[in-house]
Image (tube, rainbow, N blue to C red; front, top):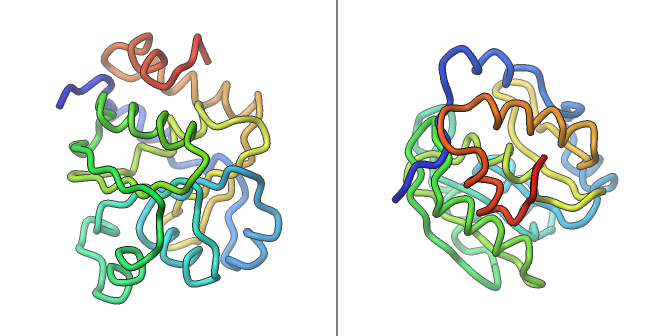
Length: 183
């Protein structure tokens, strides 16, 4: 496992403002969702699966708000029919080469991919937004508020790129692993 980027405490504030609208109605989010559909987090993935939709890419870590997800959430996610399952190591507050490469592969794949993260997947929304094509939807949880629906485009990609560039580590390597020239 190679850590490529690490979040500094002073950047946490930049992540508090959602990258898109916050919704509590999964059906409404899915009705507006573009393709591919990427979910980051167990609870978001669970609600999307319960609504009868399998995300193109789902990243989960079996945790929510630093606690283990309940058995129902775990069972729904684990029993879902993904075409491919990848397991990566990604410690809290970091983005590892394994996670970035798995995300790139999952976005390039025509099927559905579940990425199981040993560690924490919270920051995975950032590279997902950076690497997903225009019009894609990235969904992630906003604790105690709902699901954030990000429609990928230049403006949000620029905002994410600015945060990635301010993280400690090798931004160029991160972009390379995502298959990007620059954000």
